[in-house]
Amino acid sequence: MTRAEITEEVKNLITSVANTSNVQLDGSFNYMGFINDAMEQVMLELVPVMPGQFLTSENVTLIANQANYTLTNAFWQIWKVERTVTGEPPIEFEIIEPLDFAYHTETGDTEADPHAVYFIGDTIYFIKTPSAAKTNYAKVWEIRPEAATMLTTGPAYIPAPAHRLIVYQAAILACQMLGANPSSIERLYARRLIMVEKVWRGRFQSQPRFVRASSHERQGYRGSSEDRDVDW
Picture 1: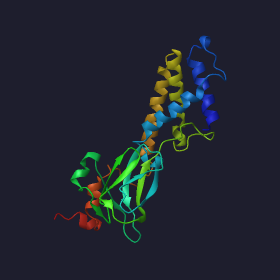
Picture 2: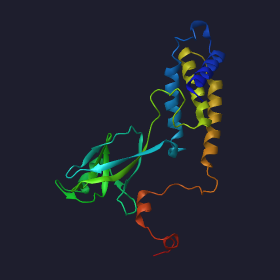
Picture 3: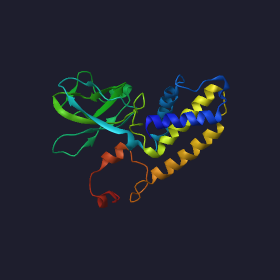
Picture 4: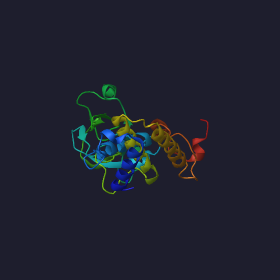
């Protein structure tokens, strides 16, 4: 749905539910404020279900004797960080808590290949401090937010079947502000959310459903699938 289509649907819902005698629902009414808020809330609901829909990445180039690097993308979550050296398989970095860095290094220590990272805000820190410059040494996978204001073409990353959730959520917020009862719209929202989640979880029918293994398990062994089943 485009921004204009979403706005029109929100207006129709508010008009049908709210008592509009005390408010003029015309061009002066701030539909976009509710729509942008709703878009963000819907994304918060969907990220645990469809993280790949919001996934992006950026490369980090190491500078000799510099541990910290500011990321350029806005993000809500860090999915993982990989070492991406040409001619070698990607290796996932361990992500530690900032206050635990003392257990991984000593003051002034450097190494050619850092083995762990931690984050403070939008800054990534490598442990140990890299001793040499290396171009595109690491790839940071991130869950990115939608735009702060909806694009004229509609949401950038929220899939089309979930656009109606934005309509319902915006109408709910507006009705609450106007003192109207949004319970009927809340039921529509809940029903649509259940169906979107149900269909999306089975989007790729040929794949098994399982909880993603931890980084330690994924890094622990790189042999064949038959070898992994051997009880050592």
